[in-house]
Amino acid sequence: MEAKKENSRVIKAAQTKKRIYDSALILFKRHGFGTSVDSIVEMAGVSKGSFYSHYNSKFSLIIDYVNNLDLGYADFFTSLPSDIPPSSMLILVTEKIMDVIINDVGIDLIKLSYEAQITKTVNTDIQLSYDRKLYQIYNQIIQLGVQQGEFKSTLDIESVSKHCIMSIRGITYEWCIRFPDFDPKDEIIKHLNLLLSGIKKG
Image (cartoon, rainbow, N blue to C red):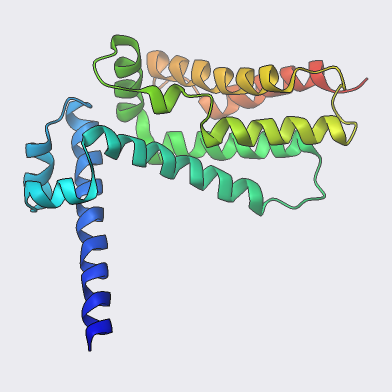
């Protein structure tokens, strides 16, 4: 009986956390990262105490969101067949990231994210950190390409990985300023093919 009660509490807590998380994302898209905790709990239909039992602050919620995106990218990366070349892995992972940005994150939240990063109105360290899972994925792909002899052995792996992320960020920014007359997924693939022509062995 006690186990049932405990399971019920765990399920209820998970449902509450999801309501808070989903409500916050809706409000962030509408009003930006300056959205108050009061607004989030009002939409979620929970108390402020419930919010703080799951998140230390709204910034920890943003961190949760970024981490969840990165975990999704990592799951996709590990699901790829091990026998495909690293250059194909690079393209497939980047296509997946762009699909998520376009279809799940969306243009409005991306714009707000850039605004927050530029104005420093909220803490965006997690998005910019080189310790992000996203950088680790690209590091693994580039390293694998070097080890397998597809990429040049003289590459600075960390630098190439950073440039892959910078290209995603730059083309996503271009999407923001040229929306809707710009296809970020098509453009990032063109860009990566140019990059690959420079790092592949001749």
